[in-house]
Image (tube, rainbow, N blue to C red):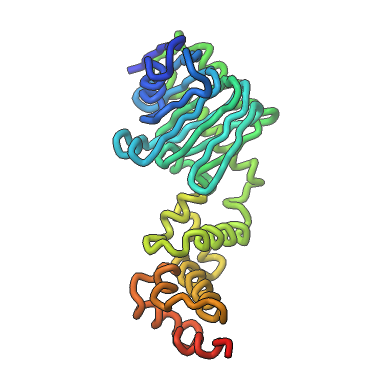
Amino acid sequence: MYQVGAFESSECVSLGWQSTVASLHGAMSIRSAADGPYTGRLVWQASRSYSVVRWRGAPEQLRRGDADLRDDPRATFEVLAPVRGTVTIESGARELTVAPGELLVLPMDRPMVCTHETACEAVCLIAPAPRVRSRQETGQDVLRVDRRGGLGSVVWSALEALVAERAALDVTGFDAACDRLLDLVLLAAGRADGGSSAAPNAELVAAVRREVRRRVSDVTLDGASVAAALSWSLRHVQAVLARSGTTMSEIIREERLDRAWSMVTDPHRRTSLSRIAAECGFSTHSMFSTAFRARFGTTPRDARAATVVR
């Protein structure tokens, strides 16, 4: 099945625009930057596997939250190519900006906020997540491509042609074209990374440690949530940590204990040891004491006693 459609908005966001956008990209809430009628246009072509959407619209903010993900899960990636205007995307701990001349590849299976503060026009290729992840040379979930020259320019020309010829395509031709286009996007993204399988190991390990420190009091903190916040696959993060001689569990334990040591040995801090244990992500005081002694060779109580201001 292959469908082509269009929608033009000249009324408020809630009258047609939001539901049409959601049907293409997944459930989300949309807030217009101004009161009154919202002006926008969507043109799309879609099969069961792929969709291509060209849209233009007035300033707006699109928010896809946890409830939207539960109600309308989408195992998809989007290849976003602005034609006019700049788009800002907040996803996890990252804020990403994409402007004309660039392509951004990002997953739609996590909360995100997309904002454009000026009138904007862009083209999106929506692809199944398994097809993206199975073809990636890197473990990154978010990829960026320069489309001003080289292979990136070829990708953009192909995407424009796909939109221009939408009425002349059938499902077989459309899916084949999208398959090849996706391959080119991922190849261009891999070359932009200099052929490396990841950002430098030290940079990723440092980013993992920063994210763990930021959430050190969260008892549910684990590798999957850290990797998601950094927009990397868990498998890739685990592989980089292993090459660096550590693991996610070790980093979480080290960062929690380092924070605990600084709190326990601060002579001006009188927070109870039980409270420190909780603030450092330990579910029980006994677990905290055991880990503390294994790391530092002394108990939290004795470490505090040795630094009391007399």
